[in-house]
Image (cartoon, rainbow, N blue to C red):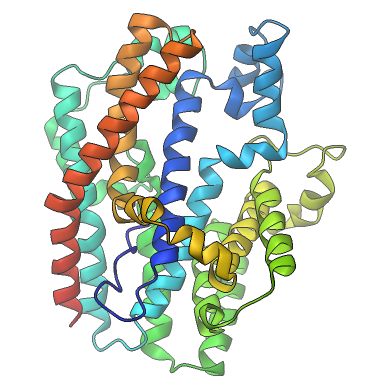
Length: 397
């Protein structure tokens, strides 16, 4: 997700992939809005023994409950499925990293540059979150009991001292695979490991069929190890799309619509595990033996199709190349890093004051939050993310 401008200044700048990444980042932000304040719309009517069901069951029969079911339990879930958007990030990273690293001189310098590229913005975001925690601005713990969902109650309950925050900013987000300071940073360990996989193949194997065979062997190894295979396969899939020169191919409108529609349908698989009688049950059943939740492989397949469509369909490329999408792409990494701490402070404070139960109030508060988020993300991109990218590019030369 931090790769949207690796090709900046080159003739093959991938503006349409920038735009897709920006839209995906916005979906992640909106998904956390639902999980924090309206969890039934995200987690849905799952197992009656779970915290999600306890909250869902409190909703009155009628519009609110019907809306929660509609969003969480139908293919419309794709519009708010932040987990699916993360798979799109991973596939895009694989593609762009393969494109930007056709030849690698020093594997060590390339890996170090990647570490800095990820760590400098992430570390800055963690320190900013620490400031919000230290000043008592985090209101998310204050609403955990009211919202009544276990996911909300996980964050910012225990005090986090500056030694812990400093460790998380430098290494903790990679070592543990997650951080208590900013929950969205669980992806950074996967980004770093996935990047090293792509770099290793690019460094050790020349292009063409041999590199495709190397990626096939890498995919087999990932499946054999069984350690989050769907996530690391996303990086490999993106790199394979590049090696197949997918960006140079074009398909017709009907084929593109079918490809994109199928991808979005798979991306709409619900957060809870599909049942045999559900729409996604027959699709998920054959994937159960891969050692990971079958819905993750549905999201993986959907993300590959969506990214593939953005590469081979001229209308889809044009849409994601529009100025608003490209702007979101430019600030996407910053938006991704900052949206949760701002939400846990600003939006949670608004929830404490208003309850966010009036549609007009919700619309006004959400609009104001998005305006602040875009402004802060833009400043962060200029002051932190862009210099980190320049430093990383210099190290790779």
